[in-house]
Each structure stands twice: as C-alpha cells, then as structure tokens.
Image (cartoon, rainbow over all chains, first blue to last red; front, side, top):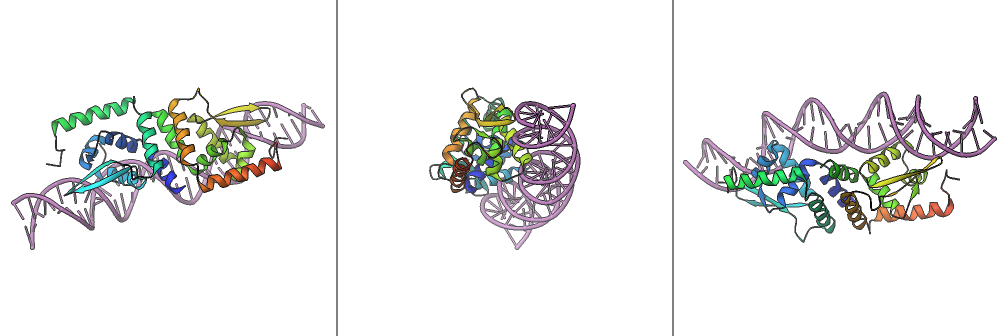
Amino acid sequence: MFEIMAVTKALADETRVRLLAALQGGELCVCQLIELIGLAPSTVSKHLSILRGARLIEGRKHGRWMYYRLTGAQAPPAARSALTWLIDALKDNPLILEDRQRLAQMIETQPEGLCCK
Amino acid sequence: MFEIMAVTKALADETRVRLLAALQGGELCVCQLIELIGLAPSTVSKHLSILRGARLIEGRKHGRWMYYRLTGAQAPPAARSALTWLIDALKDNPLILEDRQRLAQMIETQPEGLCCK
DNA sequence: ATAGCAATTCGTCACATGGCGAATTATAAT
DNA sequence: ATTATAATTCGCCATGTGACGAATTGCTAT
C-alpha cells in the first residue's frame, strides 16, 4: 500500500504533474526544469526527489549535472501505469501544452540548457 | 487542470482509496462505509464528498440513507480511467483484501446494513 | 407536531506539505 | 589548492489537510 500511496501522493501536486509532463518529451537537466517551472531550485529539487521516491522518474548524474527522465520498464507496474494514465489525461491540457511550447523555445534558444554548457 | 488535480488529490489519501476499493463490489450505504473504515461519521462523510467532487463516486439518496457507488459512463474520462488504474493497482493489496473480507462478513451478518433496517 | 436517526456541515486542533533562502555537497575549471 | 557552479539538504514559515465533536439538515415514524 505504501508504494501505491507514494504514487498517488506524488501526483497530487500541480508542479509535480507539470514536471512529469515535461519529461514526457525525454530526459531533461534539472536546470531546465527549474527554468521551466519558475520556482526556487531547492523547491524543484524537493519535488523531483518525491517523484523519484514514487519511482515515477529516475535520475542520471553526468558531471555536475543531473538529468531526469520518466521511469522505464524496470519500475513498479503501478508507477508505470500511473504515468500512462497521467500522460493520457493531460494530452489536451492547456497549461501542459503551454509548458511544452515554452520548453521547446528554451531548448531552441539554449540547446545545452541554461547552465549545462 | 483543476479536474485532473481534483482526481489526483482525491486519490492521495489512504482512507479514500479504501473507500473506492470497497465500492468496487457495488453500491454501499454510508453507514456501512463508516463501519468498515472505523472513523467518525463526519470524517467519512467529508472523504466521500471529496471523492464525489472528483467525480470518482456518485450518490443516490433513498429515504434517510445515502448510497454511493463508483461513477459510471457519464463521468469525465480522466476520472473513469483513474478508477481503472486504481482498481488494477490494488488488485492484490493485503489491506484491501482484508477490507473486502471484513465487508463481506458485515453484509452477511447485517444484510441491510447496521442502520439501514 | 414531535421525536429519532442518518448524514452532512461547521468549528477547531494537530500535523503534513509546499514555498523560500542559507548552508552543504559534489564536481569542474582555473 | 582555490574558486565557481549545479544540485541537494536543512531550517523555517505560511497554508492545507485530516481528525474529531457539536450543531444542523432532512427524512421517517410515532
């Protein structure tokens, strides 16, 4: 039950939902997520750790930078299927579409990310 | 977004998850849910109103009693698919199986429910 | 009418959660 | 070695949430 509640609690915050949606397009650097969301680095980092605790995302450290992506096949089925549900539920969401557009623009302007030069 | 967050927030509490799981077997009276969950009537009622607000359950008033069931086809797709996800994620959950067993026993002992005579 | 009961709403309290800035850690660059 | 930077952890505060009992609502039965 702990595992399932970790997933539902992780999804019960709009910022975290936006983070997951952003990662739908593939792995991103923390600095890009911070830029996208517009909250303090410490806040975003905390959200990411909650998502990771629920096994909804996984991280990869590369040098000074940390990259996160949605979890793959090795994650618990409950987490995988929750992601599938969420992605589908958000597919026409205005806020998420706006985020996606803004993210695309960010990546176009700074292909390596703001900090990740 | 409000609609989706209502669903995720509604699922982010163990008591509410147990309530939904209990209703999987079909409509139940509030008094039966109170008995099953073992919390104060006012608390259970609040939980039910949150679940209803998220369109995960719907209520039917009959005389003095209120019966709740999982939402049907007229509910928003996001709510329906969330229920499908939850039910599947809980299918082997010990706590939920125990609830189900206890509920079966309650119904056997008091076919009409504790209060609903 | 009125008494009784199921359910909900309201008011309150303790605790959880989300936000931030400061401090810390880890790595890269000088 | 020292400095700089990405990210996280920590400590704090404001707000949200879940619990309860008391009061209220709505219906039934007397």
